[in-house]
Length: 191
Image 1 (cartoon, rainbow, N blue to C red):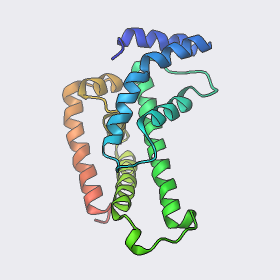
Image 2 (cartoon, rainbow, N blue to C red):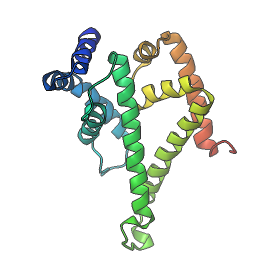
Image 3 (cartoon, helix red, strand yellow):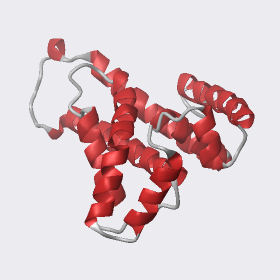
Image 4 (cartoon, one colour):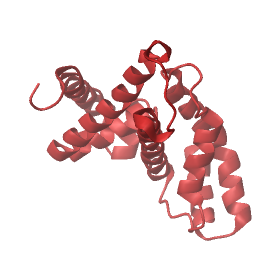
């Protein structure tokens, strides 16, 4: 893991512009972003078309793209990375859903349908919808979930990112997990 102070300085340098600074930042965070992406991909089905390296590349394009890098510090950067990763995974799941509903215009006999793929797709979307409902009730809890779930940050890192104590993060993570379990297992607000 890169030194937080060194990473913050690289972020500030990259915000000042210049390809060299942005390239140095990417080199410094690539390993950590790849580890986060790999952890996110562990629960995905075998043969998933989106791989950790592609996910990192897509996250970097969204964060650094053509616009200047505008992050205040390490915590801000990884918060944005978590959100970008979440959006990419949801977009990917939704795109797969469109294909499954006939977007590829190819008929497949019922015996050839892999029901595990459907469970994977609906689970990803159900979790995202539950996080959105949590965001309506408590935006800070939703942000905590995004940092823990999508960015893979631990209690200490999440606490630093949100300006909270690690104890508060652990307590609120338990509350958020219970809410999400209820929402996902119960099928939503009516369940």
